[in-house]
Image 1 (tube, one colour):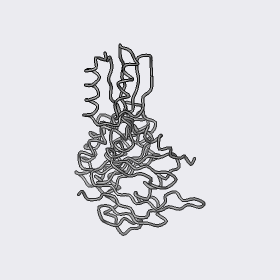
Image 2 (cartoon, helix red, strand yellow; image 1 turned 120 degrees about the vertical axis):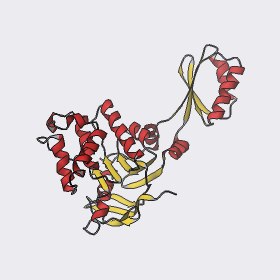
Image 3 (cartoon, helix red, strand yellow; image 1 turned 60 degrees about the horizontal axis):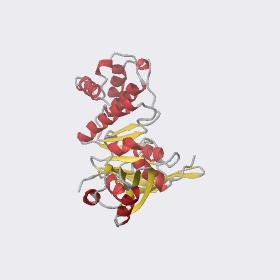
Image 4 (tube, helix red, strand yellow; image 1 turned 90 degrees about the vertical axis):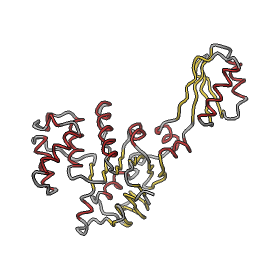
Amino acid sequence: MKELAIATYGLTKRFEGYIAVNEIDLQIKAGEVYGLIGPNGAGKTTLMRMLATAEEPTKGEIYLHGDRLLRDDSNPVLKQRIGYLPDDFPLYDDLTVWDYLDYFARLYLLKEPKRSLRIHEVLELVQLENKRKSIISTLSRGMKQRLSLARTIIHEPILLLLDEPVSGLDPLARQQFRQIIKVLQEAGMTILISSHVLSDLAELCTSVGIMELGFLVESTSLAELYQRLSRQQITLATLGKMEILQQKLNQNPLINTWEMIADNRLKIDFKGGESDCAELLRSLVLADIPLTEFHQSQEDLESIFLKLGHQQTS
């Protein structure tokens, strides 16, 4: 069994008048990409800030790779293993890309020649090597976000905390960001990422947690979540009589419901596996039903989240 990169026990943060994070027991295995989702006000950012030691828990404990994480000065080495990218971290627009990263590398006490080598490494990773002499104010939004990520990993952390890292980015910039995250995961980094762009999380994550009103109401592997909550759907179209197709479908015990979506097309909710789906197709062909479409799909992460009906607090 893999070591736990993050483990929290009873983690709670109380502000005046409300509880932002409530008794959270979170476990994330080393090397995972863990997606944190939930409506605004659910407590995601507060949880991340506590994991990054930017916020003091009211109560509860945090462990990173088995070591207790405290906000005081008792474990500076442990804190250096964390890279935290908040959703509102400022850039210094009048600096060049190189000088910006050099500044943070010096804060982490990186010495030459390692410092320059590391800056070159992260610039190549985030695809900004050709922009190293550019003034930050001249960069696009996507480039600025990749630069922020470079700053976050300049000290080679083993745990990366990303709060809404693709917010406001266009599809191409989001794709570039996803590619970088995949490279970091392949290098063995554990990544906790919060995002409202659930399609990105579905592509990146191995596990997800769903927060609501300060509680962690779901925490499971993405595969298990799909298996438990995602409906499998099949879209069918025929050149023949729709009544004959419907009659055949009614005989299959694995079909929950079906609905017409056009004159000759319908969509069915199917509770069988891949082999059952293949057998359904075979039975329709053997029944001489002239199919022009047979498309299998699964509800996506956003559909599952909306179906769960989680509440928004803001």
